[in-house]
Length: 69
Image (cartoon, rainbow, N blue to C red; front, top):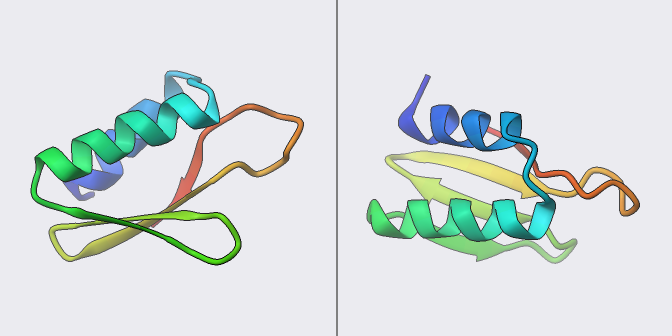
């Protein structure tokens, strides 16, 4: 597992809301020299140490932070 995956898994397991989770994840990635971008369909893409993570809200009525590596 990469540092990005471990951090995002801990963030997801802490059950933070989507907006708060995105802000925390973005700050972590940027502080580690990574990059943040956005897709046309609203996903946030985090890039750090050669790995992409796609962050999203799975259902609009469930305020949870999700991601895929």
